[in-house]
Length: 75
Image (cartoon, rainbow, N blue to C red; front, side, top):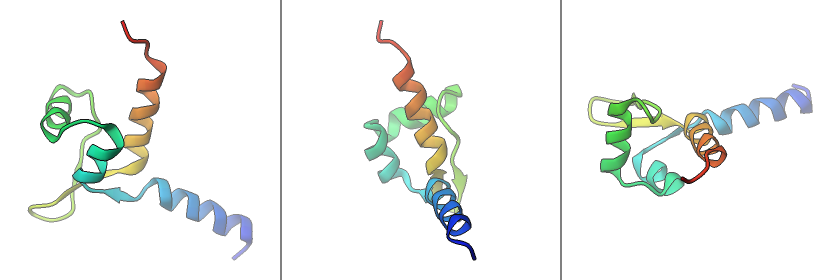
């Protein structure tokens, strides 16, 4: 595998990794309750099921959501 292709695969894998709720809370600074409220309102990325009792978020979705918030002004 070429170094460029390997680097591209590694960067894609890093941004598309699954992160669980505690890491999502840490990255966003939001409580679990507030995250679920935003999901219900359609203002936060939806999680996916890892198992019957476990959910995760795509890190790239969370990073995109954070970057969108940076572009918004505080009124």
